[in-house]
Length: 332
Ligand code: TRP
Ligand code: SF4
Image (tube, rainbow, N blue to C red; front, side, top):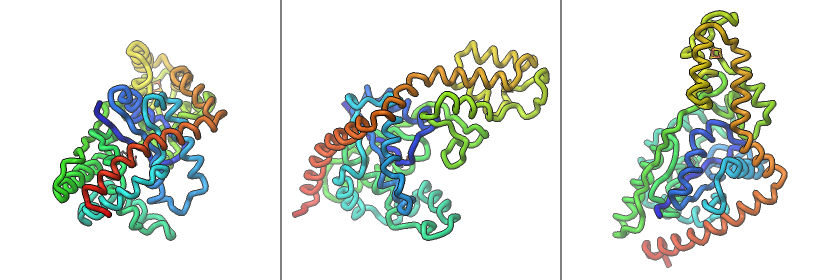
């Protein structure tokens, strides 16, 4: 079976964008590939090294969300990056063979640097560790010699660097040990935030997987609709309904979407009612996930056990890779 590796930074509770854009895809892929999913807590430190108070809880929240969404610890290996210190050792070897200008021209990193520069204080500095972001990612991926990496579009540039590093390592040490992993893009629809912009934790326009039914319903009521519509019997334009109708298309079936479209266009559907129905539909769809999420909230020791066992399992494979890499390089 081919292998995949993928991770998410430990940003705390995940939102619908994570679920629809990434996790849903992982849940499916875990049965087609030998899968390694990890929380990238070192990558979180590249920009938040001075904000570590919530780090432990953030890691647990990410894993609890994954479990609730259907990542199965019996099927996939779930672990925390920093609990597999062999990754740091591989990072050292890879950093030696990576030309400096390869990391400097990484476009995703350039964007991150730009955002950082607009902040104030010591954290506006681009650290040496942040420059190494794509190399550390390469270590994550190459540690398990992944064939493919299921990620969103924004990560593809990083994976390109990983392929380059793997090829260069093989060339330098005259080996074919490392695969050149391919990005595995998914065809999931991108969900926008409640305000119509990209959904993101820092924009406060997100719906969390762990939000309660009440909170979810309330948030849906704030979704932007057709701005030209003032009264209930004004004729609506579903295609110009910025958020609510887009959500209908993601969560509703064909019939439901057609009903909403017709009634909206004929002025037979008020936006408040429309969003109340939408909220109810979303809550119904997420009920099983919510229930599992609640279970893990009430049983944190189970999440801890899964993290510990998964990380130990990952380490066994990681040790094998490191031994082999040390031998290939010619370390003492
Ligand atoms: N950079 C990724 C993100 O921000 C997280 C990540 C770290 C990752 N290492 C990885 C993803 C290795 C895939 C493979 O989401
Ligand atoms: Fe959007 Fe529904 Fe209002 Fe039409 S009725 S504009 S689809 S919220």
